[in-house]
Each structure stands twice: as C-alpha cells, then as structure tokens.
Image: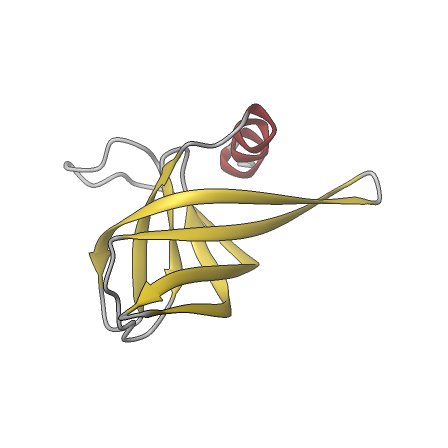
Length: 109
C-alpha cells in the first residue's frame, strides 16, 4: 500500500461496523455505519452528507478477541468531509484500543 506524500501514517483497508454519535444543531445523532480504512492516527467512515455542528464525534468500535467482544469508545476529530464519508483523527484513547490499532494496521503481506 502506498502512502501519499502528505500522509504520515499508512492506512489499511477494513470493513468494520461502528456506531457514531455527533451533534447536529441542538440534537445528538447516533448512527450505525462502516469503517473503511484505518491507521494508527485515524480512520475513514461512511457518513454521507453529515449535518455537523461540531468537528468532534464519538465512535464505538467493537473488537472480538478469544470469543470476548470489547467495545472501544473513542473520541475523534473530523479532519476531512467527502461526499461518501468523513476522515477522522483519533483522540484520547486507552492502551487497549492502542493495541487493537496495532493489530489492525499490522502488515499482513
């Protein structure tokens, strides 16, 4: 996988269900969607034409390990909006999610 000149971290394609919640005007929106790629610094999720009033959102990300499901709750900042989704920069996550990121982004070549 190639890295663009402006990108610091390599992205890996994924197809994971995630739950996203964010503020739209005076109300909170919660939606189920798909994560399409991930890196150690962020992810791209399907979220067509979001009506955002904040650049921050919360992400709930399930991980299954040894028949146990862990739900990671991560804060993220929206860094780019496209017609098909949004690019996120992860913020304030714990060591369990850090190791999950390491597993997801490890080269399987």
